[in-house]
Length: 339
Image 1: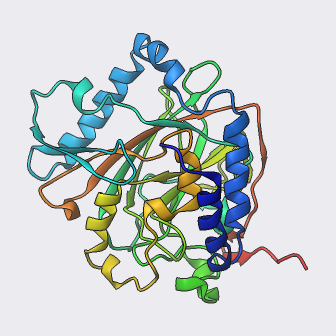
Image 2 (image 1 turned 180 degrees about the vertical axis):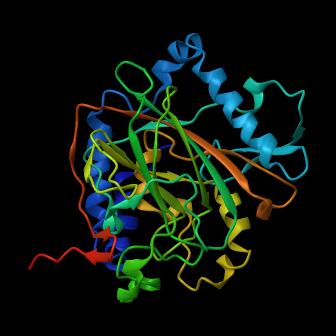
């Protein structure tokens, strides 16, 4: 699907005013410039090599094991988004006899960009942990990621990957900001829905998190960053802000609509931005598809979601992330703003 530059720019201009701390129009243009010159924007060219190495089957087995462990009823509904503006919901149920390549081997992928900015909510010093939920409430989300070298198609192993997202009411931890960007200095000492995991021999990792809420000007999304040279500290946190690539993951609009009707998401009074009004997502959709594959783990969406995605990364490109705050043992400290 292709969207005109004028249309995307119009959406982005609206977001600039609603998104203090980040110029979304500038970020969208940076992403567009990268995709326009990128040699590759997905991992489609790697499909044969990944299949030959058995990595696709390994991923399918990994996801199948998670689904069997977490399924609330033994059957899974599969959803697939092939178009931005409608949901493609299969009426079929999948059970233990369903071929793995039918259910879990299908991959969505995109290439993370070294030039893409990380928005105003990047925090250094996050914890190494698989479960980032803490005391937050919402729809459980198991996120299965695989990271590959976009040039060689090899899995990127033993590399630290970081995720962060807002909670059900649109608030990020670790930064001095609350709902609708109101000042909230007490929020600096929170750490929910942020964390690091290290890729395994297949380039894979998993997080236990929550389906993200929304905030003014942005649709539901999760940030992902790859850190090529990070080292854990003694307190099991990572302070390193050097990143190879940063990107964002998105969700089926129909699924987000269902989640938003549930408490505590329904208590979020910030304006909702749909997928087709999010400037950053529209830029990606011009040449790639950053929306996750997923299954629901029960009859109700509140039973949980298993989502998966693969990223291509060029590990030769690095830069320093724009750090909004740093979390120390004594608490969070905001980065002073430049005058």
